[in-house]
Length: 175
View 1 (cartoon, helix red, strand yellow):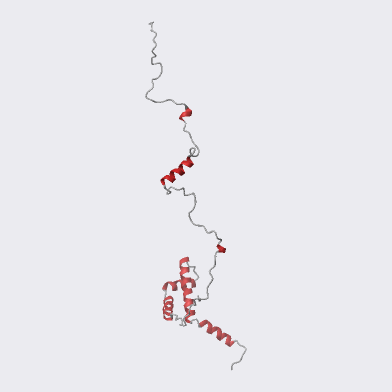
View 2 (cartoon, one colour):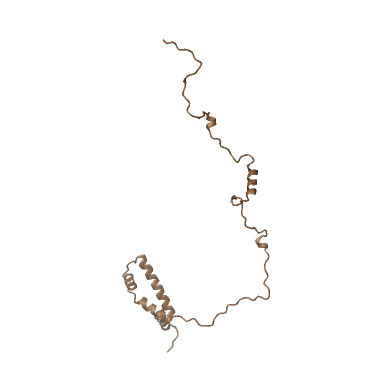
């Protein structure tokens, strides 16, 4: 065995450290989470705002700038109507309302000559059921036909028969 001379210099016993990396304990590496503001921050913020004069960065949660009425709605002063004002009266015109009989007659003739309506009436007479859209079309046209007949006074067939039957069955003798 060779003899190793004692020396005061220490040699590379462990790993060589590279750079300025500091070793820290686990407590120091953990980021500190603080709750709230730093101490004295509420006073310093107010002073900064007063110095800068900027109010545009206001907190929107603070409140509304809308004026609030301090009087209850029922207690607000009511303006009295003076004797000088007169109520406005609408004048009704005495012109008779002209009903468009010629247009009604033309529409009635158009409904009576409608081929689709005639086909639907034939289907109903045979006892067939109509689809929903055909039934709606049929109901619409028949309601308009009935309205036009009533307005034009053409519904005299049923009334005449009823009056004639009543006349024949009356207890009075007109001979």
